Amino acid sequence: MKSETALQNEIRLAVGKLKDTRLFRNNVGMINGVQFGLCVGSSDLIGFQSVTVTSEMVGQKIAVFTALEVKTQTGKASEPQTKFLSMVKKFGGIGAVVRSVDDAVELLKIT
Image (tube, rainbow, N blue to C red; front, side):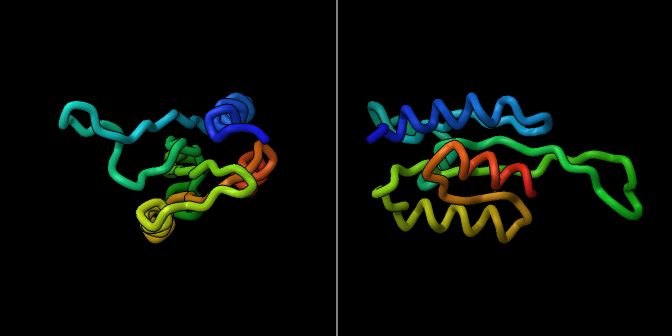
């Protein structure tokens, strides 16, 4: 079984081939009392997907915040991770747990 780190790297490479999506590794933690990363519970891969808006903003593009929590087939998202994904979706972003490159690519192709 692949590690989450190996899976994250594969997903970043595959998603990097999609025309309008960019994801970045988001390490979260603390060293010597200094917290790093976006916030506790934030996803492994964060970034944006460019979408074209319809109606009054025809032709303009906006960046939609994207957060992918990468888990192995047996891994489980923690409560803070689940809450972060819910918040992203509540505010109109793309947020999901993905377990494979195919999961990530399919999610980002249809949104």
